[in-house]
Image 1 (spheres, rainbow, N blue to C red):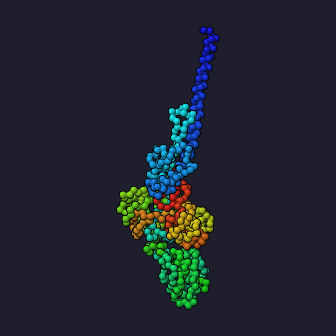
Image 2: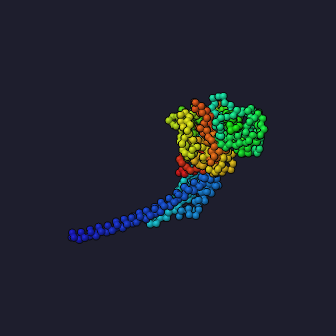
Amino acid sequence: MSARRCTRRAGRDDRGAVAILFAVLAVVLLGVGALAVDLGQAYAKKSLLQTDVDIAVMAAVAELDQEAGCNAEVVSAAEDYLTRAGNAVPGQYPIDLDGAPGDQDGFIRCPGDWKVELWAPRSEVPLGLGRVLSDDDSFDVAARAAAQVRSPAAGAVLPFFGVQGCDYGAQTIRDDSGGSATAAPVPALNPDSSTHNKAEFSLSPTSAPEGTSSMTLTLSGKFLGKADGVGFTGAGGPPHHHVAAPATTSPNTISVPVPAAVLSVPDAWYVRVLEAGEWSEQHEAQRFTVGEDKLYCDTSLEGNFGTIDIPRSDTKSFVLEHNIIRGVEPTLALHPSPAGECGGKPGSVESTSTPVDGTNCLASEPGLKISATNAGLVSGKGGLPGRLDRDSTNRCSRGGTNARTSATVLGRNINDDLLSCYVVNGAHLSDLVAGNAVGTAALSADIFASPRFFWIPVVDTDPSTGKKSWPVVAFRPGFITDQSLAATRSAPGTISALNGLVTEPSGIREVRVVLFSQDALPPTAPAVGDEVDYTGSGTKVLVLVE
């Protein structure tokens, strides 16, 4: 065969090979392109599916009312969202949340820790020309999400305890080192006068049961004969109510009706005598209470609640100080079956037939540990600033700004947030305490940003003296302040210089607080990133965790 014929034949062979190769490449490129289209469709469906399951699990966890196990409302909320018109993803299998996590029709479970896990029904992606590269006609895309109920404000649980019966209203933690005081000191009262009359007296009666509609109050003492009237002033200053004295007054006795506005507000009121424009001395003012006198429950000189000794995992030094600054660690929990003093080690998880997930027995001591409280609230410890060594928040200081108190303790001006600033529905502070149908709009969720807001555990028996171990029976929200329970957002009253801290040269002597119903808190709050474990009560923060 001639060389020319060989060359022509080789050329034809090469062109044939190229044609074959081109055909193969065309098929591959066509398949890859088709697969890219199919994968794009799968990606779009996956994105829609993930969005749906994220929202559905948040709707479901909002209905969770038990730590483990899904109730019917949880399942219904998830199903309702996933099947609602416009939410179904094209190609999605019919929903059936019973079964197992791998099922194509979806699955839901609530494994514990106030958590809901949800698998959406899968969506089928049919293969187009991509079948050139696959033996299957379609494939499924799946999406899963998990959400959890948490509590707002990391660091909100203080290392103090309350006692049932003295766990609402105006309360005091008092120095346990003794001292001569046998009653709460008289706060600054307004109105006042530059000079004072000489009246001295006692009251009968000294209190009125809550719900009393009318009552006569008798003042007995001396220098009462020229009195013009009798004043009732709230513990935090205004409101103030005045009653004229009888035209004929004994030098030793005055009897006047108690104003209805006083009897309608459970609070501490201070009674003084007015004569020719001069009030009796403030230190002579006598305390008259409406409702239970809760400032010094059971006449305790150590206050109504005390300190709990809970170890931390991050430090063995300054434990109480760090628990005040950062909040109690580890997690506290309700005791599932409280029955008097705990049999287990103080500050422990007592073994019961019901599973528990936190410390439910408290090592308790009455009173306030002054050195640790000074450091924890004001001066700081271990490189951490004191809890109240912060600017005021949300423009809630007495001046409507974020300024601190003008007065100092241990050389520091402190946070000046007012509890009344967070009231959003016109309620009195007494309404927050009583939970008088204040509903979901009583307090703004902004309160959780205030370092004065806290929770404390409650025990059912006053430990009296000495270190004991008691089960946690409740948790109570509170706020460090000495505002009058008659205060409102628009009428906050007169607040003491340090807004709840009573001091002496060595620092804090007493901490005044208002404990209120958890019903006053908003039912939910937005997640801001500092949430803590949910204890089964109080405001819920719904967090997408997976």
